[in-house]
Amino acid sequence: MPPALFAGVVAVGLAVSAWGARDRVTWFLETVWVLVGLPLAVLARRRFPLTGLLCGLLTAHALVLALGGHYTYAEVPVGDWVRDTFGLERNPYDRFGHLMQGFVPAVLVRELLSRTSPLRGSRWLAPLTVCACLAFSACFELLEWLAAEIGGHGADAFLATQGDVWDTQWDMCCALIGAVLSLLLLSRVHDRQLRTLTAVAPGPRRSVESAG
Image (cartoon, rainbow, N blue to C red; front, side):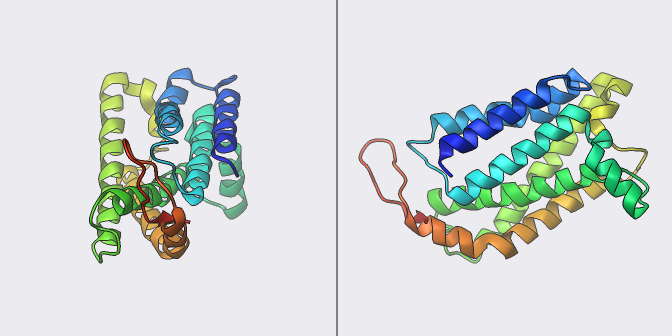
């Protein structure tokens, strides 16, 4: 799928999710990563094109965030269906969102490190990728804490704790599981794409062994 089509899917998804969103502030907080990341990816597409695998994953993650922003994570209908069908105590969409928070950034971090650092092919690439994903997850939890301090009960929809006192720990655990699964399942495919991707660097063109 051409990168422009990925971008178009994300833009349409954002527009649809914004229309009639249950809570405008929550929608913005949940989708701000997409609102910032999409223009950056478009602007950098010529100088630093991404692998098809990463584009697809980023698109899927953006749609997950858009859906959660539209309904709020605790009230996403598909999560209610899963909860009722399997007799769970809570809507699990928030857990799925945090699993994706590790699964997709793992490929993003891996691609950036492989193409811009000496870590390509190093045994340290995988553990440092997981550490970066955990660091991002921890930063996100700190942002949630800040939102709770500023917004009080008004931030409940964004936090989506659903009464779970261990919600922060579960969120980071899900991100960890997602990152590890991503590396186990996708590293070979990612390496093949990285070997053939041609990145255009500033100034003279240079070929970067990247995904293909």
